[in-house]
Length: 497
Image (cartoon, rainbow, N blue to C red):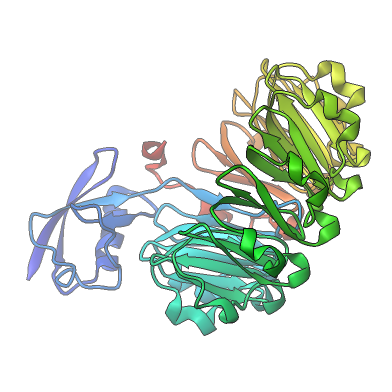
């Protein structure tokens, strides 16, 4: 039977198409692409449900006269810039829910083996060398280095109804719709939770250190697994882990905030897992931030308590009197920067990583936001100017571009460089050239930029017209020439912004 169906874009443009009811949804979608002059998009029925391209129009219960929508979602790019590791590839979710990858091939930059499975993707998460995509139907597709979570074949049947995925250095943990958890990847990094599987029910949040996971259950208790030296064993504090509302992680330890505002820590004693010296001070804690080996807690009265490795921010005694009315803390790999209510900034930790801001202290007024990479900080002031400090080679010295850093809207960072978007859509970069600090080769293309995503050593900018511009470490995602044709925007991209 021949069906007559109306297909429209969000912009209002529509077309009437004829198709046999035994034809596939995919073939109808291709017809719509041609008729509407777009490159990609996915078909939704009148209820807003995504139609499976592999099914027939009859099985999709379509009848003549039905009105369908060809949805062209805004391009999303995913990377991983965690100071602790970061990856060397990018993954882009295109307007039709498919995925394009580039960068280090065995680190997730090559997804060709799972290309046909990467449809209707809604979210992507990454370890150091692998990606995991959650599809609209709640299933999961993985790729990249098998030892880092790129191979989920052993748990594939369990990966249904997934609502969230968390990643350690080399493993993934997925929370299912029923609150159960499924893990895969390197066992040493938390990829094997089989011993604790009976306990992992009604999980509401999972946090990760480098090689371990910690899950908060609905009743406020906690289950941990992975490398014991990195927080995978919480047995010594298990009785204290009750009514937990949030968990923060350093490289090798965890800190849990309880409902009464107290804190429980475990993991490497010298890297934040032992807070016994400050236990009496840890009351009415509102939030916790972490460097690689230390923690900083903001209390209800705006004061700060720190512990962990002294050289990595665990000792704030030199600035303790200044740490009052703190509203936010940012961390580089080895130092902290606190923004006070009056817009001033207090720093401590490794001086070479931004723990010493004395050279720019007079400029740090009316700060509204701070961004950090591994060894440096960049602060955006209320007037849109920028102040930087820390390791000069990592972006702590921005003198060469200082005159350009005006009307800055936001800043992104790789491990060793910064990229600022100005209010006119242009971009200014500085820091290590091989980490994206030098955008000279693509500078003319960096106009009308809306968003920037970063990987370990490269940036990817999405322009207002939908084009993607990349730079930085070529084999780490800075060179997207192999996929650039596929990344080109569709004709109706303006309707998505």
